[in-house]
Amino acid sequence: MKRQLFALLVSSVLSASSFAQVSVSEPWIRATVPAQKVTGAFMRVQSAAPARLLGVQSEVAGRAELHEMAMDGQTMRMRRVESIELPAGKPVNLASGGYHIMLMDLKRQVKEGENVELTLQVQDAAGKRQDVKVNVPVKPLTHSAHAGH
Image (tube, rainbow, N blue to C red):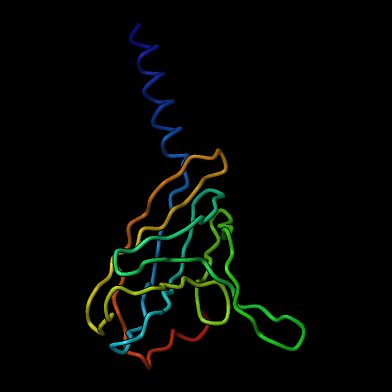
């Protein structure tokens, strides 16, 4: 009986740890001017196991969407995407000029120096969903990410 219980505990711990362990580094949100209703959020997201970023939420925004900047012929266009793949062990940059988060219908001005909580919705390869809360600092309007992002 003890062996069965031990085996059950070990298997439950292993299955729990197989869920996509998602880490976020270098997050930031661009500050806004008083009447501005849209801003961007940027960060590096990495998952230990294959996963997908499905969406994002924030109390400061009426809507938050995943977006991608991509060339369409000779024109750079921004479009909403349903999800962003997170390959196992490989960082995915959410940055200007590529994938990023758009915070829209802002409920208030987002000011430099404050922190805004974002909730990232992630789904692992088995279909299990997880919310990842991120406390994101607001940077000045003129801030740009480090080279290589």
